[in-house]
Length: 285
Image (cartoon, rainbow, N blue to C red; front, top):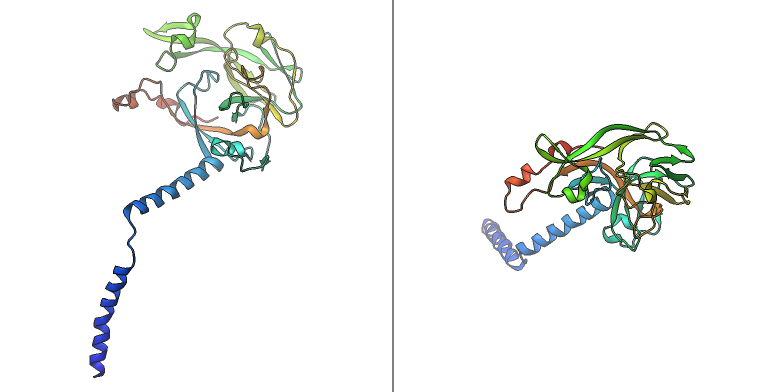
């Protein structure tokens, strides 16, 4: 009799499990996909807001270091966090937390004044309390001229995203049968030894001969390396950036991860490879 009861229990257990399986609602593939995408979006949001964010170069203001079509990563932790660390500037972070001041010479991404309302990339030249001035195309920092040495011309082939119009007629040239853009290039060396290349196309009084700018507390003074074609702290908005509040600084340029000359076509995948400027990938700052 006992053996019969045990057998009944063994037979009834699978039946009970089958009953439970029928009563427990099965998760739909649509719901599972939605949950996965939601988790992925949260992870991407955290990474983009607090770790690294991608940035693409839309203009020629940072030539020769950055070309139109360059893509780079920006470190978000370098100078602290503010509302502009979050996509769209959602005001969830009051003021600025874990803040630090950029180092002179850093290439930074920041939020432009409200009248412009977009992200911008420039080089930090003046720190809070310092004075900045341009005299005949030479940069003066705290009253001292920054060494500026002439070096080899900067040349770049004319392509879809940097054509003759962007180059400017006087600077269009031909090398080895290919149309190029050729600009006079100089090497600037900041106090402390940090150096970088700048372009100086002509003597233009409104940008090469300025008054003295005194950087207010809590702000930085930024300039584009393409000195004659950059709306930066030398000019007030909307023609420039004016002094940039530290809480508007989003991060520091770290490394280039892709670059294209603009000649790629979506419907011709092989052009994605031929248009890539592979030698620029992995370049640091």
